[in-house]
Image 1 (cartoon, rainbow, N blue to C red):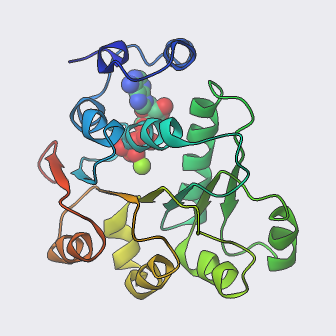
Image 2 (image 1 turned 90 degrees about the horizontal axis):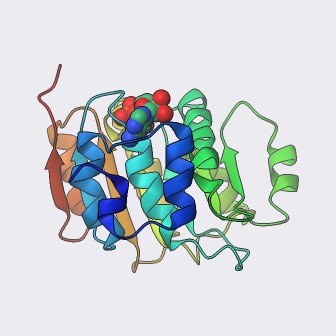
Length: 211
Ligand code: ADP
Ligand code: MG
C-alpha cells in the first residue's frame, strides 16, 4: 500500500490537503503504522529521523478529534521546545482539512502566566515537553480527562533527558482508556520498558536499522 487513499479512512478534504502539501505517497513508517493507528490500536514504531513519523501519528490523532467538543483530546510529548514547535507546525498543516482545530504548545522557557491565560479555552491538541505540562497539570490549568490519544515522540531522547518520571506522572492524569503511540529513532531497553508500562498490546513497527 502506498497511497493515502488506499487506507480507506481519510476524508476527501484530508486527501486533497495531503496532495497540496506534496505528500503524494506514504513513507514506509506511515504505510506500516497508519492502518493500526487508524484502527485505534497502540503502536510503537522505530524509524529514523526524517521518515515522516509526525504525519503517521498526526493523521491518526486528527481522525479521532471531535472539533465540536472544546476539550483536550490529544497530547504529544516531545523532548524539546524546538521539536514541539516543529510537531505543532506539522499538525496545523494536517489540521487544515478539519475546521477549527486548536493546537497549543506548552514548553518551558515561556512565562507560565501567559500559558495559563492561553488555556482559558482548552485546545484540542497539546504539544508539550513533560516538565512544563506537569506544572500545568499540578496547577489544574490543563485537564487530560477527555484525552483519547497520547503520543510519545522521540521517546529515546526524552529518556536520555531524564523525563521518565515526569512521563509516568503525566500518565497518572490521563484516562486508562486511551490510545498510546510511541515513536523513537532508536530502541534501547528503557524504551521497551516504558512501552510495557504505558501501552496495551502494542503493534511493533521497525522500519530500518539504527544509524
Ligand atoms: P520524523 O519525525 O520521522 O523525523 P517528520 O515527520 O519530521 O519526520 O517528516 C520529515 C519531512 O518529511 C517533513 O518535512 C515532512 O513534511 C515530510 N513528509 C512527511 N510525510 C511525507 C510524505 N508522505 N510525502 C512527502 N513528504 C513527507
Ligand atoms: Mg519527529
